[in-house]
Length: 405
Image (spheres, rainbow, N blue to C red):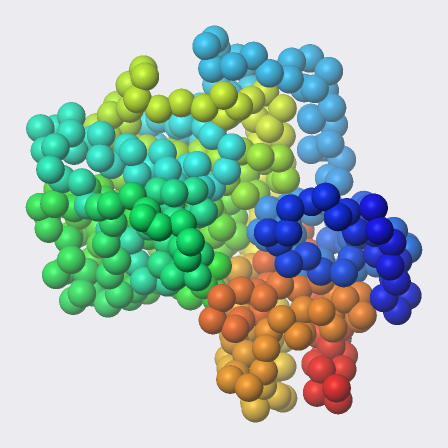
């Protein structure tokens, strides 16, 4: 390891980690609630939450206890047998969603890979082997594995990895007419994020998703929602499709499901739920007892705490505070966009969102830059109104630091 200093921060770097991440100059050693602490003892108000992962904050005592108890009982047994954590978690997700079947994996990309395979296998089993097109939206981000990457609409992510799997097409986001022209008898599914998070926090309109549901029904395609980032309560409802009132045939989850442990899920309803049969798809670690136990405890906590009302309340507060920032610095920021606690503050041309991220650390604020030159705010859902106001004071100090050079 190599140790350097930046201001009041000692930064331990690990030279043998592969250089595929542009890591910030901070070495986090612990977290508590909505706060992170580095090796020098500096505190940072966390508005990233592991990229929308730690919905209940860091080191939540009930989650930590559930992990420890399960680890002391059964860590791994494979999917060759039944085990209680995964089976009970599947039952709980089916109960909460009204859907019929759940496939567990380890990440959002893997969940989307499973969704792609489900769509094609469903068409195949229905006697339509040529219905293979996976339609996604411009601006989409569905993951970095090869199939999910083919569905992702960002040339920079694809450079050097082509040729990617074929059979993927893209359509303009929030354009009903374009969607009408794109969905046809070759479309296996329309895979879409209700809110595009990675590309800069761009919500779908209700009209667009309603049209997607109607067109898929009319033309025999599946509608699949990627709720990896926008699901699990981040919009103010447990599942993003519940916020929109549009029910897909399947949806994917990951990120905050187990509050930090690796797990992904494909949740399916109706006839497509039986499309993947023994030998069609699998994973060694998917739904392992420890992350499944953490996810179960997360859902149990939601049973007794009204996160939906809280997310709406503090989300409105955060959005209002960000709007005030945009109003005070109109040459730097556009008005915020997003829903609940998935919000973006667009940065105008001539300024770089990444500059505010780095300077934010000096103010004890951890924020994130997303695509389209946007500051993304995805704090733990437990964040308080006082912590939102504190974060905005730190943001304003960050902005002043950037503007003064």
